[in-house]
Length: 322
Image (cartoon, rainbow, N blue to C red; front, top):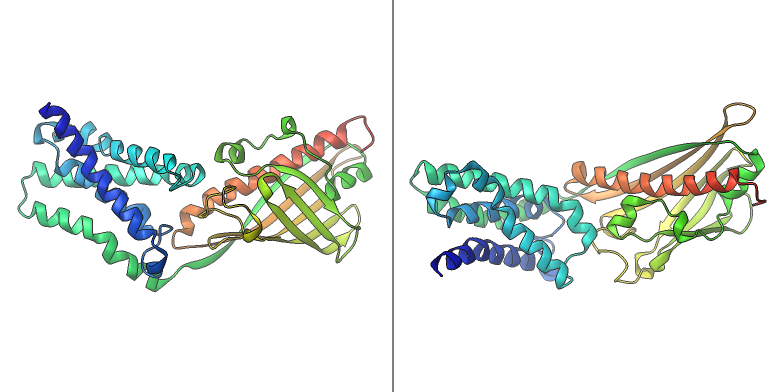
């Protein structure tokens, strides 16, 4: 019975700390100081969870480095499951930040273990500082402010088909069946899948609408048009049009942190039978950790683009007239 109570303390205290931090960093009225999408929350909070886990553990167990590295993951995983269960966080957001949370928790566990094993004086002071550090650093981080960054996602595919047929499938994409959807990453993250694309006419100023499921629509305007060679278009996603259940608010396209700006199709002739279709897009991130978020955003955009390119290729190379 004592053993179970000890494990309840080892997992329960850091878990309580995690929920307190999530509540504080999620309160809109103090969002100018404490924001979930911040380095302070993504790095310092799991560091504190790991440190607290080791602090309340028996020193005999702490002597094992595997304990100091992996046991801090238990409250992290419990936090993960509970926030998903009660819809506090979404699956996509958690999947993207989980590697950072686990690594930071292990680092916190190793640091706390060092103090515990060396029997350093001031261990309680150290733990108190670790717990308070997110509160101290977040206002400083918000004072520095998020730095908007613009990034490019580039993909291409080679297609053996008639030039005109390829271009017809570029400008307008008829309904995409579910079995045609090859976007494994976006599907895993629960992002909306592409449904179809409509264009009112071929030329500068035309309105193009890229429709995804779950209510996501990209409103696009053609900025440059060279028939069967190049098409450049602006992209606008209105987050208020997207149902709140569609995407996690921290990764919603067109929201406070992630927005897609424009796209470009370029059709290049390789030889008499093959063309290379290039697809570029530019997107903007506004966080204090663009160095990490840009990896995920780039992978997501490339997954979406590769999915569309694959659909265009299969249709252009098919024997049907489309």
